[in-house]
Figure 1 (cartoon, rainbow, N blue to C red):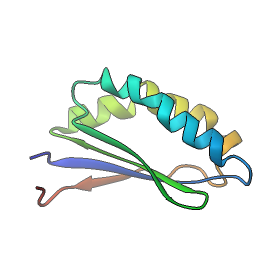
Figure 2 (figure 1 turned 135 degrees about the horizontal axis):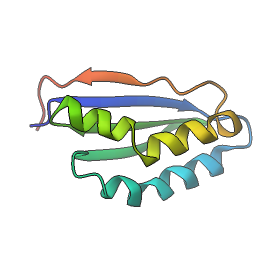
Figure 3 (figure 1 turned 60 degrees about the horizontal axis):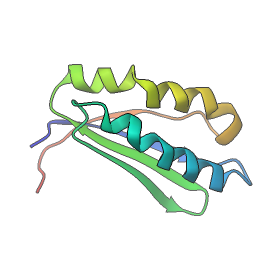
Figure 4 (figure 1 turned 135 degrees about the vertical axis):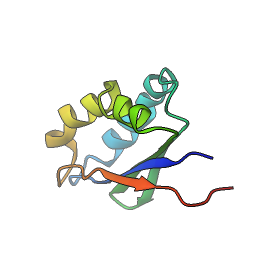
Length: 97
């Protein structure tokens, strides 16, 4: 069972919803190249609300993801796409199926 996770809620600037969806879909190949990222989900929570949720076994794997290409691209595009700066929540998983 993965032990650690990240949850990153993302609020779209008006009119940027399709750009965010396209960006999140385009990030999948980058994450697939990260062996320490066990699962990665790009989520549409509702109108203009998106999130990223991913899981890891170790803190080193989680930090490698935060130092990786997807996080860099997310921060590079943040001012253009998001109404608020992305907030990265580091979680500890207690149970999973």
